[in-house]
Amino acid sequence: MIAIIVGTHGKLATELIRSGEMIVGNQENIAAITFESGENTDDLLAKYNEKLKNLNTTDGVLFMVDLFGGSPYNAAAMIAAKNFNMDIVTGVNIPMLLETLGARNSLKIVDLVITAKKAGQEGIKSLKETLSKYVEEDL
Image (cartoon, rainbow, N blue to C red; front, side, top):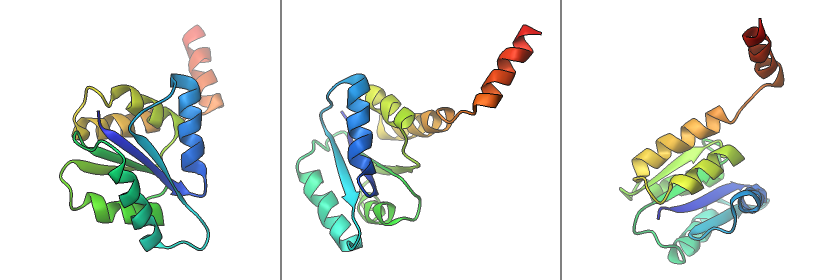
């Protein structure tokens, strides 16, 4: 099972995991990293490394962060760049997290990244666009 670390500005990571578990149940081999005001990249590196000690990383690690180029991304990149079986996806959202949780037992890290990106993008919807598709289908 690929380990997942969700890293975000503020407490979003904790709440994303909590929300995901409300939908799919308790999860193992997952951790939240929060980047709080006053912290720096070194603080995040220490947090990531501490969490990695408590996760089973044999099958790989997927870091899911909120913002490309943000501090949670930059700290994760320092770790993932040195490890073949680790990667990072940005723009974490609930659809991305749910799909990734469901697929991480059966996919390699490279395929899990593809799944995460696709689910994250497909999870973004507009009411008006969705309604217009149904109206067009009814015509």
